[in-house]
Image: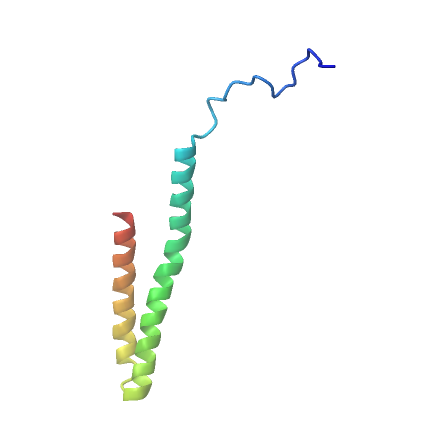
Length: 86
């Protein structure tokens, strides 16, 4: 036998406050980018510095190549951030 009472969730109109799927997807995409960029930037600088460090060890030019490649990594990180925000 069916009850004539409606449950609280039956025939409920959509709330005007509920986020739209497109907006939620955009927000989550922006959040993912914001979480990823610092790790990308640090990784590029560290990799550049490590390449310079190992070249310094091999060529006995410490610390010059580490500084140069660290700066190139820094510039590459800045370019990557600028590319992502375009």
